[in-house]
Length: 121
Image (cartoon, rainbow, N blue to C red; front, side):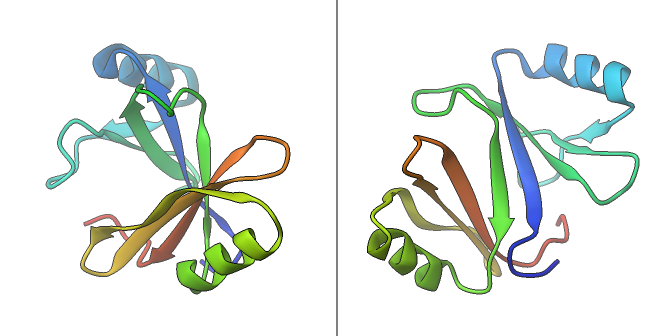
């Protein structure tokens, strides 16, 4: 994927099993636990391009969140600040080769950022 592509969508849910069955039946998504990511089943759309995770709903995470692939989270977060938006989650590791962060735009939308490999472990 390239800088600016939507790479991942998290869907916050209250019941992981129920949500997994629902989205699998509704859209035909393949949903499975990935080693190292227990309690966070990942979904894959039939096109094998779109994917994401079913994330436990929690404080500050109540709406679906799209993640945009970027070349450098550090550079993008600097631009977020320069443009007057708000960083809500600083750069954090996902694995040894990938990181995420999030910001809130001027309209209150929270957008995730992703840097690194896009292959599932």
